[in-house]
Image 1 (cartoon, rainbow, N blue to C red):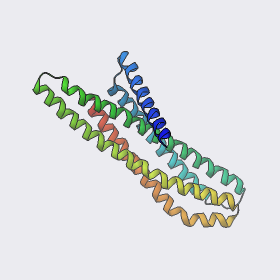
Image 2 (image 1 turned 60 degrees about the horizontal axis):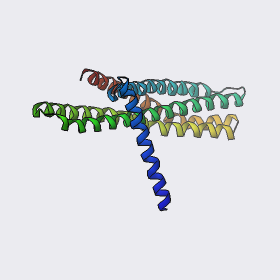
Image 3 (image 1 turned 90 degrees about the vertical axis):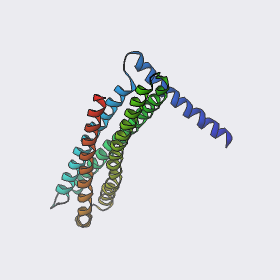
Image 4 (image 1 turned 90 degrees about the horizontal axis):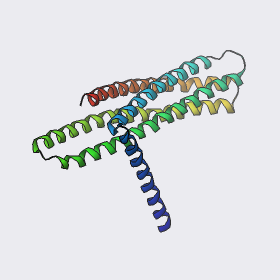
Length: 214
């Protein structure tokens, strides 16, 4: 047990060291943590737009296919499964990008806090400290909207998976009828998810504008 704990500790230290080396390498060519943070937030915003479009596509395809009136049920299953897999992939990318934002934000704020001690001017130190607090507060608000939207993805993905699995195991018209009864809830969940993504994109835009001005 002790050996496992030591290995885990060494692994975490190694990862932290790699991250620090990564930021240091970029700083040597004039790219600072703030620049990396801006890039990563823009990546999240791009992923949020992709998630919006993909889940909208899934909703449209499910609406179309569940109005099944004859034809190959195998083709219906394949179409819906493809939408589910694409949705899951986009959701995974978004979650990874949010994690990346949190990583650089923590490094940036830690560095900023440490560098406050380097000021000889009490007035400038106080102004910088106030700016740090304001930036951290605005960042936290933005991050909360990201996580709120992110949390909405899992229930939708679970429902999509349930519908796809049920159809896979019951390739008949009666299965389509059963799925229709579940579809109203799915439709509402996807619409809420899209709304939260739009809200989060606006929050990211607002924070990026503030970050670029400060």
